[in-house]
Length: 91
Image 1 (cartoon, rainbow, N blue to C red):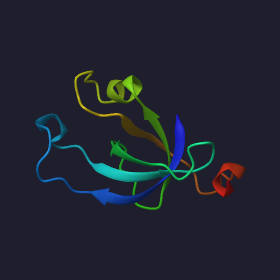
Image 2: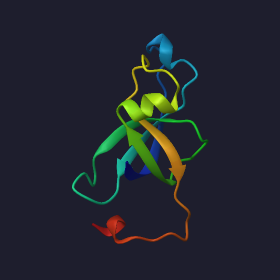
Image 3: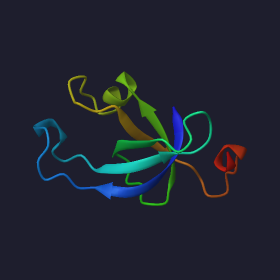
């Protein structure tokens, strides 16, 4: 898993049919070697822009959506509480 901040919504009028109904967002990784990397994620927990979140990737992300065939690499699995601080944010 990685930690990230949600920075924008992604709207895609034309996309793979399997993605219909998925809320797509743009996330920026915070901390670690991947800091600054941007990911397109599926949000299944109603997070919002500005939220710090935990993201799972790969086959674990598809399992969260209960569909191993869906073309998804990253899913938001948790919102990090505001009062939770960690040094990775400032890296």
